[in-house]
Image (cartoon, rainbow, N blue to C red):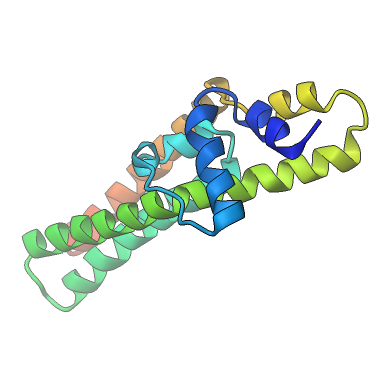
Length: 165
């Protein structure tokens, strides 16, 4: 089985979107397109990229917290701090949207390469199992990240309000 077919099995749904873009990226060096589905962190978990999704989520929280905290520390207006935080987040998510397909491509390549070494049997079934999409894998991160986001929201309120003052 050739690598293109393994990639197609790995991607599963919407392979008609990813595979031609990946082929052009690999063969012609073209840039991968913007991925609007990746404008939410949930896309990474839907595509079983748990480590990347976790990193994107925590960087999102850190960016928002740092921007707002710095502006509050320098005594900027709270409204300005919030607007600046959301502006920084918009820039971050645009960056993520432009990089998401490259993250996914690299993720797929690593997993498929590992499968070809570790799974001498039915590569097609192994690729479909390791890749594809997963709704169940999104539930635990959503609960955990919801709790962490709530803690960050409280921490931000703590800093913005001047230690609950």
